[in-house]
Image 1 (cartoon, rainbow, N blue to C red):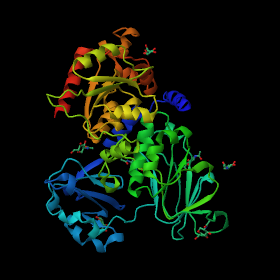
Image 2 (cartoon, rainbow, N blue to C red):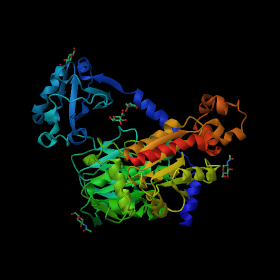
Image 3 (tube, helix red, strand yellow):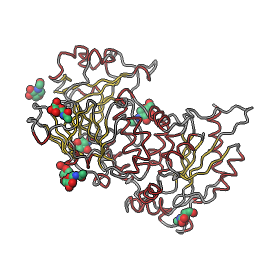
Image 4 (cartoon, rainbow, N blue to C red):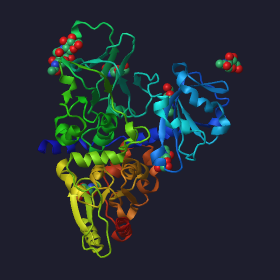
Length: 518
Ligand SMILES: *[C@@H]1O[C@H](CO)[C@@H](O)[C@H](O)[C@H]1NC(C)=O
Ligand SMILES: *[C@@H]1O[C@H](CO)[C@@H](O)[C@H](O)[C@H]1NC(C)=O
Ligand SMILES: *[C@@H]1O[C@H](CO)[C@@H](O)[C@H](O)[C@H]1NC(C)=O
Ligand SMILES: *[C@@H]1O[C@H](CO)[C@@H](O)[C@H](O)[C@H]1NC(C)=O
Ligand SMILES: *[C@@H]1O[C@H](CO)[C@@H](O)[C@H](O)[C@H]1NC(C)=O
Ligand SMILES: *[C@@H]1O[C@H](CO)[C@@H](O)[C@H](O)[C@H]1NC(C)=O
Ligand SMILES: CC(=O)N[C@H]1CO[C@H](CO)[C@@H](O)[C@@H]1O
């Protein structure tokens, strides 16, 4: 544990290249061409495109959403199905009658076509799409390795594979294939600093199954190969780059899967042992050191990832969501409380507020004053540092109903909260509101927690003690941003402490109480 803590502290200096991320997200959004079906007339694309059509029924969108993948070719004025799946598509003829579908917005994004969020109206004539079993298009000619995603590359291999970890090699037993790939199995593809720490794995189709690769260990379960390199050591990165993507990729196997992990870190296994055991009933193989040749009936290389520390249920197997993830976490760490306290006026039991203290940076300067104010509102207050070990801290978090903390990796612990609990994120100066929301706000809402975000004023920032009030740090954020993420990090993340204006902040703790009364 001591080792773990020390390492955590050292590596936590490696803050994410978050500005880069925001930029990537922005580019991603702007690079999407946006068309509606009616406008598809006239759109010319030579390559087959894959469409994901999401049909929603206004009655109960949760239950009736279903997803279907089809290969489509847009050619001249008509949308036609690709050769690979001709017979099955009787039902999709409707597509050629755009007037019936004028409500569907589709986004064309390189090779994929997705319906946008903007049109949740019931879609007449789309009922037929809700029967994937009947149409069964899931298997349609997907490439073995998908390099199209912004966040991660993933190979899904349906054939038998031979894995030789020590030479970072995976061979596919299928004489019909002639493919070969190089892949870094880590879900932070857009971040070159993180990816430099990940070894390449070579994936090759092998037609002549002979000597050097005789199976030494035969398995009857699939393998998932991934790396825990990158920015692990910072808890937010452990979750957003590994823990959550691993859930998306492995949950559907219900434990019947083996993990082979490259760039292993001994502390990682100690910290996440309960979680890893929940997802795989088999021993973990240290990929880089494994000299034996292992054979599996099929394998996934790389982890699927949808967004920062969260899951898009529309894209995940069986519709798994962050609610399922949080449930798995609570179960793995034997956390008892599933939901936060429900306050009744007559009740004497107090809601518990956890203040995540930070010792070095972005720490509260007036913690006593905050505690006093919160107690005055009827809270039982717990002040804790997130570095007491995951098992212990997860238990503390799970006993609380409200958690507050300044933006930072410690807030990752919200995954242990009971449902309906309230997360209050305090955002220091530095234009960090968007990143704060992306990193913890959206994940909180996706886990069915309540979320409040509080931006501090200049008066509440200790930066006023270091810079004159007319300095660019306060008056010209843009000029600092133009110096890059490192400048932002140094000034606003590493040099800033917070002296919370308790009168201004009080309203947030009152609102949290209201959430608990509902
Ligand atoms: C599409 O249109 C072009 C020119 O308008 C024509 O040369 C081509 O044959 C058409 N393709 C199909 C598949 O109809
Ligand atoms: C589309 O593909 C191009 C080149 O392959 C790539 O540069 C671009 O980022 C991709 N855009 C999206 C939205 O995937
Ligand atoms: C899609 O819609 C849901 C709710 O309808 C919303 O929460 C989500 O932010 C939307 N996503 C995007 C990418 O617009
Ligand atoms: C990893 O593979 C990529 C793509 O083939 C290659 O450009 C890169 O040089 C490789 N890196 C190492 C360290 O071998
Ligand atoms: C594993 O299976 C292969 C192919 O069926 C067989 O040749 C080999 O002897 C088996 N290895 C072991 C250790 O059982
Ligand atoms: C912020 O607070 C911590 C803990 O009190 C302290 O060690 C650190 O020096 C402070 N940072 C600055 C820039 O004042
Ligand atoms: C256990 C182990 O690491 N074995 C070998 C892996 O491969 C390298 C060369 O790539 C050898 O030096 C190691 O001995």
